[in-house]
Length: 152
Image 1 (tube, helix red, strand yellow):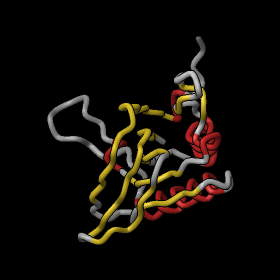
Image 2 (cartoon, one colour):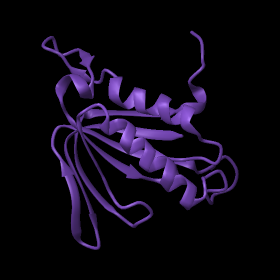
Image 3 (tube, helix red, strand yellow):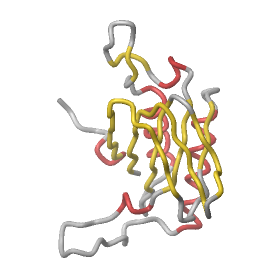
């Protein structure tokens, strides 16, 4: 599972020119689900999204999590994060989980995030969406669940 997290002042998602959801201060999370992803990856990614200290404290140091600031999450399914672009010029999406299974895992991720008590909103799985955001920083992180076991 690969996620791209952006700290935002606000964000919104629209489908067919109709606003679906919006958030204020928080994170915009793009989620790519790969073929072999399972509950272990889901738990790892949920924990990172909720506990990554990317918001400033009173000394303006990144020391607070989304939970600490009681921010909001806007989650967007984005299979293109699973693309392989090492060879050639056309991205390969062969590593993306099939949509029916990916949607189940994606919905599980949303439930996991919601257990924290903070507001979790999303777009429309599989739809062409327009995303608008006001990036805060900019502060952007890419997390790949397959790289979770590295040692310093």
